[in-house]
Amino acid sequence: MGALDSLDDRQREAASVLRGPVAVLAGAGTGKTRVITHRIAHGVDTGAYSPSRVMAVTFTAKAAGELRGRLRALGVGGVSARTFHSAALAQLNFFWPTLTGDSAPGIVDNKVRMLGQAADAMRLRPSTATLRDIASEIEWRKVSMLSIEQYAQQGRPISGIRPEQLIELQAAYEALKDERRQLDFEDVLLACAGMLETERRVAAAVHEQYRHFTVDEFQDVSPLQNRLLELWLGDRRDICVVGDASQTIYSFAGAQQRYLLEFEKRYPDATVVRLETNYRSRAPILAAANALMRGRPGALDLVPAKGGADDALAEAPTVTAYDSERDEAEGIADAIAAHIAAGVSPADIAVLYRAHAQSAVLQQAIAARGIATTVLGGTRFFSMPEVRQAVLALRGAAVAPTDAGFLPTVRDVLRGLGLTDEPPEAGGAQRDGWEARRAILRLAEDAPAGTTLRVFADDLMARAKDQHEPTLRTVTLSTLHAAKGLEWPHVLLAGWAEGALPISYASSFEHVDEERRLAYVGITRAARTLAISWSRSAGRGERAPSRFLAEIGTTSRGTGSLREVAPTSRRAARRG
Image (tube, rainbow, N blue to C red; front, top):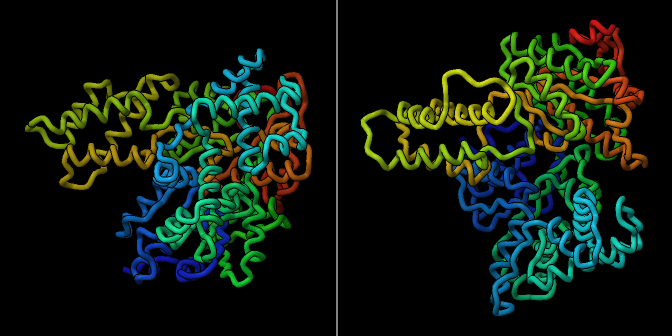
């Protein structure tokens, strides 16, 4: 089967154009990663690309690992799939010794700690939260390619420190970093860009090495990343960018969607392909997403891949109002319990919210029903002590002779580490460890026939390197930011009230628009059912429903994008 055979018409069009500037405007659920990998595979299959001269740039190590894994499955190896930082660091480490006769500087492992040390030298005592905010400001300044003097003119205040102290502290941080001969993550990009700009032989070597560029999530590039990409390209035009302006949710970190929106202005002869066929969500969910983004710059009109009885019977997303956040959490927990009672796997359910602070009451309510949860953004699966212990034990067992078969040996090793037939109570580290060991056992149970313990252990190590984490059979709790790029059959969106979404400090039009895009990301994570909720009070304050609910449209008569329902939790029902 050829690399293009399994693609739809628009996907095939995007994957077929192998030369010249290409922009793939890919809506949520339209198969953008599929297009990226199949386009590269098609280029290699036809001889248009040499794998070693292709660079696919992503924003996360996990996305880079997924690209490499999908390319391997298509029989393509040797492609460089890296984050901006990883690619820049590799080039710095390679060229720096040649240019300077010395090794490249080390990398700052904790920006907040170094800022604290710089503050101590200035006899300042900012709080840890203030130091974190300052670290974020330093990152924003650098990716926006501003000097400290230019930043000072921006007048961006930070609570807990005076403006003049903020500027002085940033200068002290830079001086301390130079004294220790270290770079932070943003410096890596700046140093790589500077090296390419000033050293012709370095630029020539990079241009010779990489001929074909693909950039994923192009709506999220910062001015610094865009400049580095220009330097990698030189005077060539063999670039393919993939993105969706409606999913620009990192403007606070320097992302500028204008690079995607203005791609055609920069390259008037560019091939532009719009992917609007959504393979994830049912029609009513897409209707709500389209309504929210209608008229916004770069918005795509998503359509379901197929209709029929399934979509005809699909209900509109629901919206439920509760008296308090506690009532909302109880109602969400009851809805999750009802899903599971109907045969839905907990792994197919996610609760998404705007801020981490909203997770505690949700975790408590869901755990009270004996349902385990996993919070995205916590400890990575392969970094969990229980998982690292299990991998080491399995690798050890692989070199010891045994008469038992592959699967019995895996079971024995995991039982020896504490895996029991019945899980402990939901909530807490013990249940988290049990779920992790059980996930490893499921991987063994799903392994192809003939798999050996050595092969299985090696596969776990490869998964850890690529951050290819197994699916835990737990309900996922996540912020909207962390949920980007993921999907679940059943999604519950919590906290759709003014002050929470849009968040209280989103005062300008641009900030509210970013919150709208964040809401859009939440809606488009859902495949089959979508339930939105909000509470009328938070503490002692009263709240109004999110303006985004009105923009989508709510009605009990089925003529809007959302369907209003009464609270279903037992507690809320008693209060009503």
